[in-house]
Length: 525
Image 1 (cartoon, rainbow, N blue to C red):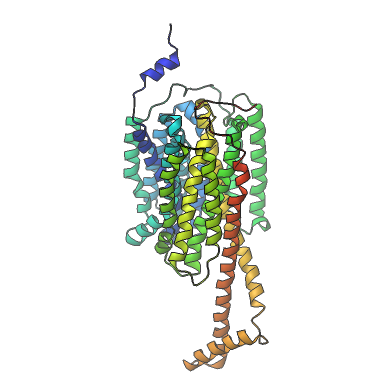
Image 2 (tube, rainbow, N blue to C red; image 1 turned 180 degrees about the horizontal axis):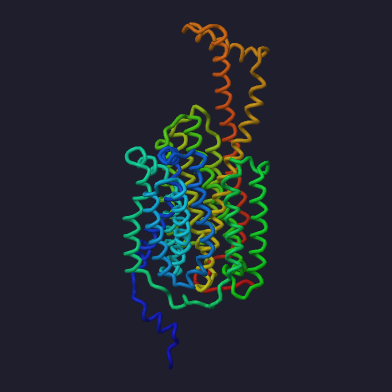
């Protein structure tokens, strides 16, 4: 009997230990995810060194996120067009070379240009690594594979501010880019040795959906600008934000119309016919909102209100990473032994409870008061992320896997951008409201506030200040206390809202089908 071409190709593939494949793809992916946050703490130093304002330097972050978001959903099509191994090596090489260029950048415009290239090169690494891991491991070990992948995806953003702060304090901001070079070289060598394309990765059509690519770039790029600059520009009171919002709606609408009507879509949206995938994408978007929202809020609280240095505030977030690492290993084992939906249910309960507890801290809180809620939140992320990714792809065929992982990671990243925009906007708006409410009680008719002002005035006058100057400074001290308390109340409210999101995801988790355990594609009808 004649053996099919695909079967012969499969037999010709070398047998590689899947854990070697996992290490090969995760070195580059960890490097790319780390770069999404490692530059945050270095912006003041970069701005000063390149003679730019801090506001101008924020385009270093925005430019990276825009190009990254545009390329990310194209990864499935690019994999079929160029080959998955070739695309992986090209992405890591491009990311490494652009990192070198970023470190050597003589001015801010050049740095922004190289960050655009860096974001575009790294855009495909997350979905590529996820797809390769799911193929390298048999279906019954997908939980372990996603646990290993999740450690890199969840822990790297937490390490970024700590690593960035330490590098800036001890060396130069340029070294936050130079450290990518040895990692990139290692990732390329490992990919050459251990990563191979499966036989079904092939160019399905010679046609290129230029219109789809254009509409996607327009819509996603504009959306990222809106989310990143919205609070800074006061949202829809800004003409720029209104224009980019209109571009977002138009671009994404035309993209959807194009992809549903063309025979060769650059992003195949028919993958949403799988119930597990549709429900999983929704849940991972919300998880992205909570994960990135709290990742921004806690260092902001510690630096703005508690006076922590940047490095110390980053270190204070590490317990969540420890909890994630511990839970990932356990969740990877449990998913292989029981229904992953039960593991997710426990994860959502722990996540909602721990996030709600985090929203109950006050101005007398120490680091230990932040550690245990974050540790349990990290545990919840592990219990959610491993079964969620495993169940999301459970019934998707291998031919559709690259496209599915691209969409999944895009929406997780968009969820993160929404989370950051949401928390920064809510903190700013609620702090203004709370300041006004609390400030109404600081009057001459309020005996408590007048007693405090009098005490502060008397203390300042005892140090040689005149009555008028002491009175002005006393009221300034009281106003500073009001602002801190107003910020804290805003923090408590926003974190409680994020905790509620965990509980709201439980009904959507129940929509997911039980794991098939076969690894075969079972489409919905």
